[in-house]
Length: 264
Ligand code: 5RP
Image (cartoon, helix red, strand yellow):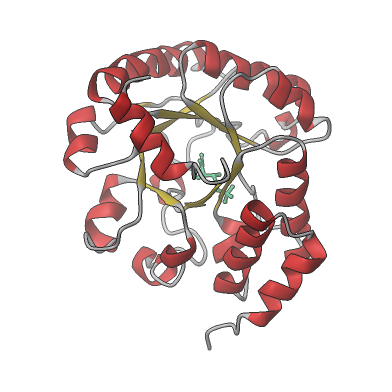
């Protein structure tokens, strides 16, 4: 890794403890105005002080994040299929590395769709993006996307997808938490962060997911809906921080959530 690439990665995964709380807010790139993310600036602004990085598209960067907000950007650069399409795997690189540099992104992110109709294209996208990232000094985050097939989230599938992502040169990988997650971690030689997935029933459930993932070796979370679809988003991100950075138990973190007053 070049110095610039390492430096950018260390803006996301904090060198002090090797962990990160990334705020995912890129959902609009295929879901449009997702519930509670209809006005991205309104959703994100109160959360940015607690995020180690934010994962967004260039459209959201330009319109909804103050350039003075000193939050590292993980720029979503793949897309091309909307939720109206049965097959979500037909993605291309939609934002250039030059644009990522212009936006001062700290990393670029794309989805890979292992086992899906456009597996091949998505993996070739990853290989090319890693080449460009190495040239420019930008780390690449590969997202092991499952499209609408949420049942794919098991250790066998995710272990395969994460390992392939690392073999293609991804500098870090975002995946889902699952039973036997430690096996996914063991067989992937680059850092893993976990998505939250669809909103869980309770705040405690989401805190437990983050806690279990960290216990099993994840370097952090890249969480969206379970934070900003909560009735207390600031409380939730603070609770997640307590789990990820302070090794709080889910119950201790729930007290942190409750301690932060929800905005009326
Ligand atoms: C979509 C993504 C999202 O950023 C990801 O799903 C994380 O958000 P959530 O915690 O809401 O699942 O990468 O492909």
